[in-house]
Length: 182
Image 1 (cartoon, helix red, strand yellow):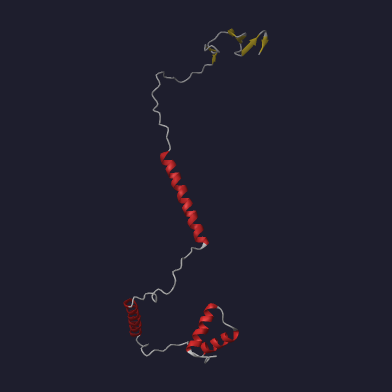
Image 2 (image 1 turned 90 degrees about the vertical axis):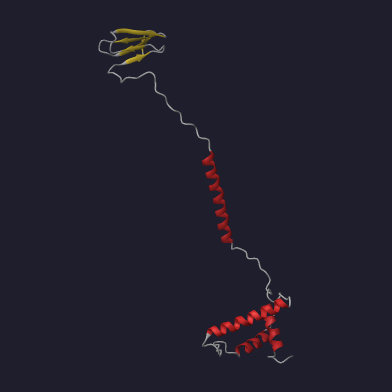
């Protein structure tokens, strides 16, 4: 077994930790090595001027990128595999509802705009002027003949299809058919 805190052994433990194959003793050793560092506070010589630290880190990153591109090795730049991002189920359901609403609204607007409308008929003036009625009673028979009941005399007014119409002295109408009052 190697020195428990050598770089290669810590690297091996970190790899096992990442893959979930760490035994209980190895986990304890790894945590012991990790806890020996005080990571609560980082003090840098240029911490009083954060712009200098930022420029220095940026310069080092740019230098590393330029070296890797000069060597034609861009694998270090894109070391993480490209992952496809799936939308959550709720988001997909929202998109499906929105798409169906868009389809239905589009169809509705299409049918409203393209439906065949019946043309409005222009009404022409009637040749025969209908005057207001008078205070008279009229009886129209089946053959179209009209009898003014107000002006008619008492007695039989008409006889049609075996039914006779009779006006009495007090103004009542009697319909009589085949010797029976109706």
